[in-house]
Each structure stands twice: as C-alpha cells, then as structure tokens.
Length: 495
Image 1 (cartoon, rainbow, N blue to C red):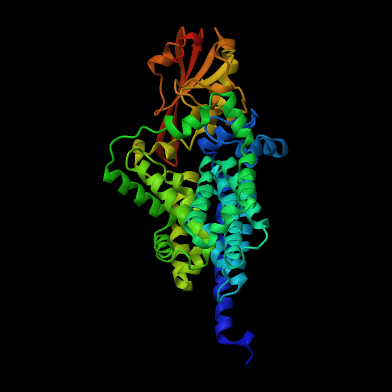
Image 2: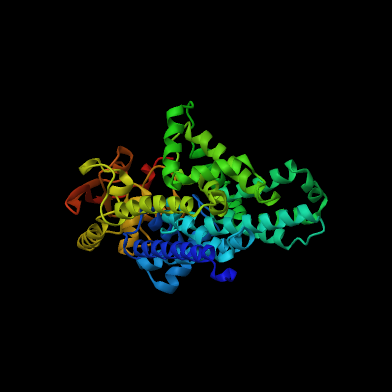
C-alpha cells in the first residue's frame, strides 16, 4: 500500500476537510454579520473621519479613516461601503496564516496546518468580532501577523547563519510600521523585537548590524503622518492615548480578575492552554518565536496593570492574542484539541452575532447594556431627524456624545453632524462652533446620553419635539428624544 493511500493519510485528509468546511462556515457567518448587522457606533464614528481626511486623528492613527474615504468613493455611503475593508483584512489575515503554515507545518504539511490555523483564527471570538466591524483593530491584526512572521523567519535564519540577508527584517519592520499606523499599540511589536535582541545572546551580532537600525528607521518613517499631525496639535493624540484617557486608581484584584475572565471568553478558554505552552517553552519553534512570547507578556502586563486600576476593554490586549494565533494549532497538536477551540469559539461568536445583529442577549428589558442597546433602532430615528430638520429649517444636527452623533450622521448621510460633548473628541477638530453662533440645532439624546447643564447652557431654548421608543423583537431597549435648540451659544462650551 502506498503512503498516499494509507489509512493515516486518509484520516488526515478527512480531518483537514473538516477544518476547511468549518472555516468556510465561519467565513459565511462573518459575511452574514457584515452584510446585515446595523452599523456599530464606533464604525460610524470612524466612517466620518474618512469624510474629513487628515494626516492623522485624535483617537487613533489614520489607516482606517484613509481606507474609509477610499471605500466611500468606491461603494458610496452604504453599510457595505462601511464594512467593505473588513473583507480585505480578512483575506490578508488568511494570507499571513498561509505563510505561517509554510514555516510551521510539522508532520501535517502546509495545507493541513493552514486549515487548522484558519479555523482557530476564524473561530476565536475576538478576531471574529474585530474582523467583522470596521474599527482600527481590523487593520492591526493582519499587519501584526505579517510583521511577526517576517521577524520570526529572519531571526530563525539569523540564529543559524549571521550572514543571512536582511530582506525579512525590513519586511517585518515595514509591517510593524503599518500596524502602528493602524493603532498605536502596534509599537509593542518593536519593543518585543528589541527585547529579544537584547536577551538572546546568539542575536547580539545584530546590534552591530546597520540593518537593524535602518529597519527601525523604516518603521519610524511610516509614522511620519502621525508625527506631523501631533506636532501641529501639541501632541494631542499621544497625550490622550498615554495619559488623558487613563484615570488610574488604587489596584483592586477583582478588577483584574474580571478582565481576565472576559479575556478568556474573548479568546475561548482553550487558548489559555496555548498561552501556557508558549510560556513554558518560548523557543520551541526557534529563536524567532521569542518576539511573539515577549509580545504576549509585555502587552498582557501593561494592559493587566491598567485593568487592575480602571475599566479596561478586552481588545486593548489584542496584540497578546495575535501573538498566540500562529502557534495555537501547532501547540495544541491533536485535532480534537484544535476542534475544541474552534467549536467553543464559534459558539461564543454565534452569541455575539445574535446580540448585535438580531436582539441583545445581555441584560433584560431596560437593563440591557449600553453597547448592545444602542445598536438597534436608529434606522427609525434617522428619518425623523431628517423630517424635523426640514420642518424647523434647522442649521445643524448634533448630539451629546460622539457615538450618537456618528450613528445619526452615518444614517442621515450628514458629514457635518457634530458632538457637543464637553470632553474632547474628533469632532472638535473639524467643527467650528463660532461659525454656528445663533444657529438652530436638531439635538438628539437617548437614555444613556441626555441633556446636561453644560449642554443646556449652549442654547437660548431647548424644546422637545418627539420621543421615540426603540423596541427590538418585543424588547424595549432605548428611548430617543429629538429637541430643537435655538440660539446656539458657542461661548458656553466648557474649556
């Protein structure tokens, strides 16, 4: 009997086919969400960035906004246009995993390893969610996977032969720059690489190589738009990301425990086994694995430090999860262990799809959480906003917070909508309050963001026009109130 007809190979083919089918099912589920789910509030916010092109932005670097501008030109002001780019980044991520599968095939071969990697990646909830909505993180993922891959391959070859060519080093640096141009925490890959060179003796010859420093300059050169923007804005974005957004209090273990629990759900519990195996033997796949291990550690420590002191979103530790993905299938080894991760993660993602595309599952009635409750019903609100603006001949549409303003702006196709939140946001960089002195404003609130005293002081009068009760599949979620504000007074805006 030839090897290709052996029972072991046939069994392997069946297992590979199973993971391929599961991957296609997961892709179909993601496509359904992309095409049918209402726009998420942050997606609408970043879409408006793309309608006000700039070198960079207050909250994040510019890649996502630049791409949204291109998408608007290609596909128009539509939900598909809003999310078209996630199809691109999904394909790029799978391409990166194909490269990884060629470096880590083990006894399985490249094709079999790829489908296992793909199934794990597509099913892991955090990547399934991030890969379905047009937020900056969806660009961070593929660029990070590419950067880690080229760094992995370069370091493994350099450890064997210090005369190896620097091409992969430069490619890793380029994608590191693009990752950081997508979201600032991409810079952690550079920190992990620098630490690797310092702590692994066989890599010390790199410290004498001009290529290491030229690669660092390449990564830095990609950041020029962000650097120039920050120089022109008194380093506003850097200060916000590093200082202003953090309200660190005394460390409390329950906060950290809550974050770890949510993170375990976000990656599906089997991934904890992968993390442990990575830490136990950080050079199992060669010296090139060390940057991924250090990336996991550095990111987790920094985010864990913040999580113990303030409310921290699970995806802030996204790069730690990215560092696990290429090694998950090789480390789990057995097909049933990989399948456990795929089925568990796929089930969690299915619940997320229902929660954000069909009806909220978190909380009951009016106790629904804000992120889920604000997801639905705005397609009913938007025509009423348009009606009242025309009826009262209002000059402007506004809301008390950026997420409401963005949602309304996207659904009414109004690029000039604005937020009157006293806290700084991106609207402050293109909205000129003085130019609207004395204007009449259609002002929209909901149950989470109402009319505060500072906002009321912005108008001579604020008259309620209509209340809209938002009910999704029989569940009351939100109450939206539309006001007419007259005599807008920008001088009352807080400093």
